[in-house]
Length: 125
Image (cartoon, rainbow, N blue to C red):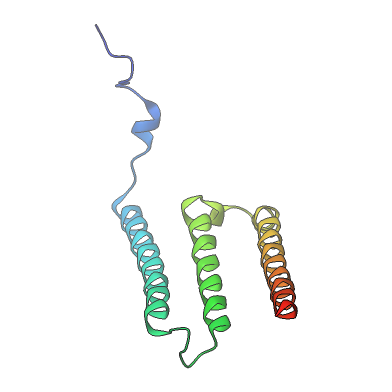
């Protein structure tokens, strides 16, 4: 019985090869992506270890730093691994702008409700 999942003369597989220069460029891009994401993660871990709640910086600044670094990492992952970086600028904006607005809305609601709850608790005491 012959297997139907193996296609010997697949034209896509034959045309999928690339030159050594293209392979070097692909590997260089992968190393750059790995290095950048690792560097951002190391900075996040260092911030978590070095700065305590009673440290020299305000805790709100540290939390904002975590949010910004996490959003940068998420945007870079979407641009590279989901191939959004290869699309036209308008398509990038159509896809990323609603998510950015939604994230800013969530941050606003979290901050607004957090201060409302904090002020309500302080009036009860």
